[in-house]
Image 1 (cartoon, rainbow, N blue to C red):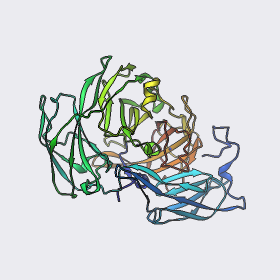
Image 2 (image 1 turned 90 degrees about the horizontal axis):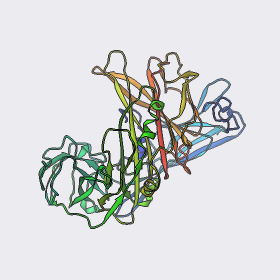
Image 3 (image 1 turned 135 degrees about the vertical axis):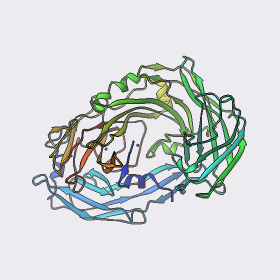
Image 4 (image 1 turned 90 degrees about the vertical axis):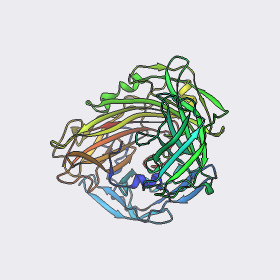
Length: 503
């Protein structure tokens, strides 16, 4: 089975990621009226349950299957606010996608699923997801693909190639490791070669299941207002069946889709840049871009957008942070006419962490907006939600490096200045060293609708050094604390990066 977004989320030890309460009496959000975390002894014993159905959305037809939870570590933790102690209630996961934790007292629980914690007073959890493409198998071994084709429009510096397969849900870019890329003026490919396993979503293709290999020429163009952008221009479609580890050859002709479209935005890049120091006082701005694609409407509730190919428009004209009104941008559209057009705006930021004299590790985060493309055209594109304010580890400012925080530390924060956060996600990373370089490994992800979390047992360990990413989410109608993989549009996200801290 293709590794679903559920399985990706449950994996501990995610390295180099670059994709969140304290007692309400203490919390900043005064709208919460009960001390939920202290409800450990209410003489009410409940049963925690969850289901994990994955719907694969493919052009050959949708399919729903349970995600096997039998190997998932399932534990419900309750924290006693008077003692600070967590009590563990072991549970089980099953192959049919269900989880079960019996005999759990009432109150707010930290439901542990692998390295993910859902912080909620709920007792029924929807752990299902919706994913683009059929259920399939990823290529993990080197799997060479060589493409020879005619029909390119004369190649320009700034053009690039997107690979995708609508039925399989595979996609990726021809990056620097690809050989035989076209030179300026070329109208054909002669032995373009790349490793399919290096694609962003390398689902092995099988023509007997309706898979088609597609390679798109994204052509550099200029908008009505003189702004540079890249747009879907010509596409090569070919039948292909792959065997992992075995080379495949593709031959064909690029053709221009008949359907066309236009897209324009009033892009307030300055509004994203204005939040840079809220991400971290030392944060560095790295990039800003907008891309627009199309997808089946069923994917509006997916764990993530089709945030890669097939792109219809990609806009990252320069490294400036000034506002842009593009005017009309045109593109050719090979995707089904009924598909929903969705746009994403992202501003990227980094902050570096170093252990001793080791080379620093650079952590990448972003502030992003995802909406139907028509919303990008109808109003200025600016953040829907900003970063959280005044992050703390226990009671100390979290932007400074801290020691002695304890293994039972809490993280807390104030609401964003811009927009309304409907949920928060906290990622905890442990720093290490390897070959003279600092490394970062995610050890926990906590989802909550409060403005704080306590860190459950074994997240922080004596002798370790950590940092946190605190994400604020705007996603009306969807609770990340009870349905962590469900999504809705519009949605926005913004991150804060703390300093380093150790127990």
